[in-house]
Image (cartoon, rainbow, N blue to C red; front, side, top):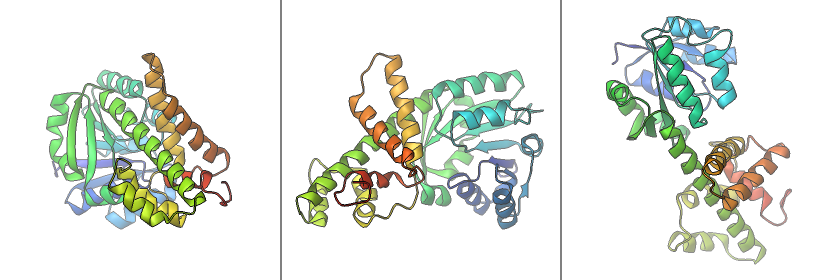
Length: 295
């Protein structure tokens, strides 16, 4: 697949590092685009690509286009706006990596078919270092034949790769992954906040958590940041709220009640309202520790 021209749309924390990863592995990253043109220009200069100012130009100069944008609204804009990726898109493959509402992926697959293109979702359960190093955890939705045809590229981006099912199904799984992760993060922040209020040794508490039923992946990744108030962003509070909202909507569509997910959603939305949406999700501890600015 390294003879294919690769395009990237959305060059933030994840997209930019995925482009660097593929370049390092010998792919022809021919086209890049970001809503902030300076970001695209800088990355293009770094990896020897071309930064385009129009989405249609990315399609014209790429065989496979990976999109990594923020939300449903942004996805709608890049595919259905006045300047869009579906322009003269016959024969192109779109791999959409953002966490979106499942129906958006279904809509995109149908629209791609109308213009002679193909779409699949490649939902990511990983962070910035994994994007840079080709160690993403990817969940794929869409045509299984399309997945198999593009598996070498997906393998080069990931250390774990799962074909989940038809369009929208990977997005459903991803929403549940992030819903549970967000609940775990909020619970850890509350547990550590209570421990702090009780005067407990918090490093000792984390060690005990790690050896009991309180253990979680979030304990490994976020506990030290919560204790040190280091909330450099790997996965933002804003995205946490968005993804929990997607999961809650899916649950409501099936008549399932989600009191824990809703409580977590409310906490992350509180961070957003306080102007803290760009902090890492670990910043939720600022709401739970006594004596902190927001506690």
